[in-house]
Image (cartoon, rainbow, N blue to C red):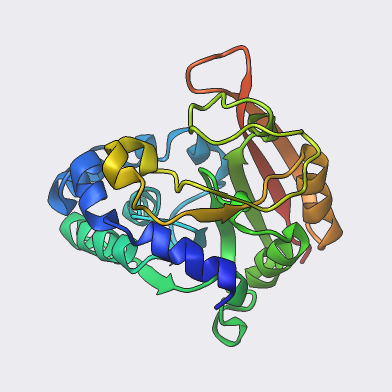
Length: 252
């Protein structure tokens, strides 16, 4: 496992299971909400799927299963790839409570087993702050392309590059030049929800943030055909961009 992945893994396994219980409910409570309306739990991402039933989905950095389990409830065959054993524990317990099965691989995303997963998925899907954990966008997109079936597609939704220069999503991460290419240490996403004394103890993550052109060029430069690039408003300010979604196809 790469050095930065080892560091990120320590951060994402720090009190993670307990954090999900406190913020999302017990696995049984979370499962009950997922079962009520799984499509609604997918939020705006649902519209990027052509169908759900019977398709194989790779959920990249799928965390506690917050999107994988609704997808499974809608009839998809979902495999989560994530760095955290604690996330896996919560996700699998929630899936069991929801009466569905998801596969879960704890691994470095850049070291996915291609003997097992090469061209295995109809859809490769990620959302909510993934790209900044990977310091070489080309290498990341090479892996996404490798696991996508011919004719399949990638749905990549993430924080908008505008967040490099302004903390518009209130993630309490440092602002920097839009064109900055530095890798930097920063708090993991949930650290801001802890009291200061605990917050100081949480291991840091290593981040690299990208421009729009870096993201788009990594997608098309590694074989995907870019079909859509949508920008979404910030969570608390509809006048500023907060997220984006790129949809790209792999030729048959």
